[in-house]
Length: 489
Image 1 (cartoon, rainbow, N blue to C red):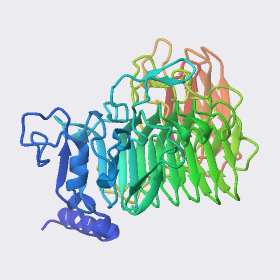
Image 2 (cartoon, one colour):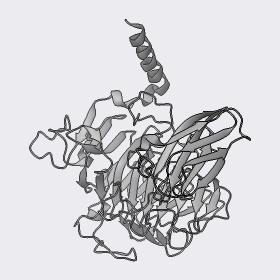
Image 3 (spheres, helix red, strand yellow):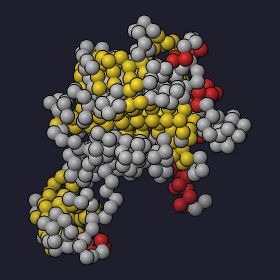
């Protein structure tokens, strides 16, 4: 065995030991594709995939991995077969699984820009007005998704959840996994005594009396790179309702949600303890977060239009997004380049304002580098985040791949270097007013200067900085960006 292969084998062994029983990818995959109508439909391959997601959930052994192709899926069974009411149908499972959506069946890879859609709209005719109200949804499922008794071993990623309508009376309940689910809360998803990890998800167009997008009861889910948008309730928790629960929310976005009573974004009650980092609340109807019943929040690096007086939140006085009033963008499709909930520009207050250290570990190995200990390296669209420096707050990372353009010159003519006298020199002819920011490797802004259009040779005094490696990030008013790692003597 070569030395290179020896260390590769050793690394794989160490990662396997680290993950222990959570290495679920070693299990045989189960495939689901609504369009696979000509195969055996036994879930053994994409050609022979189940067409019904619930059949796959029912057939899966504990710790199995289910892969779901892009397409729209509606619930087909009621939990525990305890009711004949069609609206009680919901996607459901109560044993730990890995459930991955948005697969391209040709490449065999996830493509979040073509999502798997879980819909409670049985007739497929929901109509959403400009003010966010939804009509033609009286036949919709009370809950699109229900989970019970899950641990953090469960991971759900890459789904758009729409069309839940939890409008039953408080006394109308569904039993599942030994838990009692109330059918007036949790339109999009209801987690009861259940703590799954949710990554790269969108909850939109769900309604209820409480918890339009999601309800958590005695639950501690982990939620990352997730959007709650356009959900509404008659009472509390337009985006999310937490009762006796302890959710962890990182790099997520709450926008355009509405509650007629309290908590347009989130309502916490019954001694819930919410932990939230790097997240953004803007464009909700009135109040972003409300707490009741001895509930509390631990927060850091968040941004809010209405909740800015709380520790860990910065006030937003203007739309930080590309276009919060059009969250799906002109193409009307979530997870694509024109989504309105991207940071509006390189100088948006939410750009480079999150703490990368708050992202959880990349146990799914999204970037396929065999490093499951690093932080999750992608945003909701599957695009790379700038780990090691800082990350943008919210579910989306600003698109900084466009090279800063120069008037009448190739981009390679832009030079950034240190002279050795604690002076940073930037040489090139700018075609617009340009700002240079200098960051420490921990993501702290340590120097900044703005240069005028057409200036050619510019310098930045960095004499107060210690010798070491820094990140220089330049951006102009045209939203063009250039980033360079530099040793400053």
